[in-house]
Length: 129
Image 1 (tube, rainbow, N blue to C red):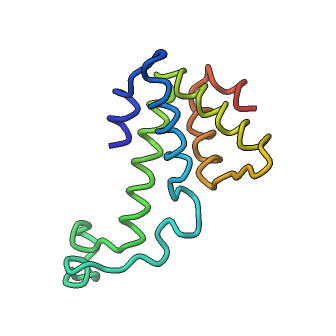
Image 2: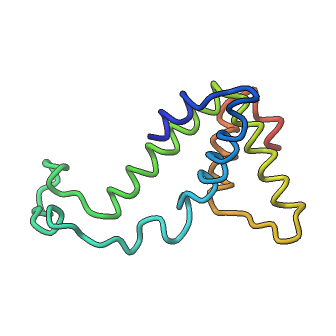
C-alpha cells in the first residue's frame, strides 16, 4: 500500500493537499516506536503454527517477526518512493520543519525513519542534514 501511495499520489498543485495529508499520516506510522510490534496479540493461525521447525519459516512466524518484516517492507517502499518523488520528500521536510516551529509541535518516532529513507537517495542527503 505504501509503495502504491508513493508512486501514484498526484503531484503538482492539485495533488499537493493530498500529498501533505498522506505525509502527515505517514509521520504517525509506528516505525521505530516501542509500540511497533512488541505486544502484538497472536491470531488463530499463529497460535496453531508449530514453532520448533526453522525450515518452514511460514509456519514458524512469530508476531515480532511479522511486525519486523512488515516494517522492513514499509521502509523499503518509502526509500524507493522518496528516491523517485522529490516532491514528496520536500513535503516531508516542510512538514517536519513546521512541526518544529509550531508552539505545540510534535515529532513522531517515524520522523527519524522517514528522514533516513529520504537520505538513502543521494540527491536528498544534503537536505536531510
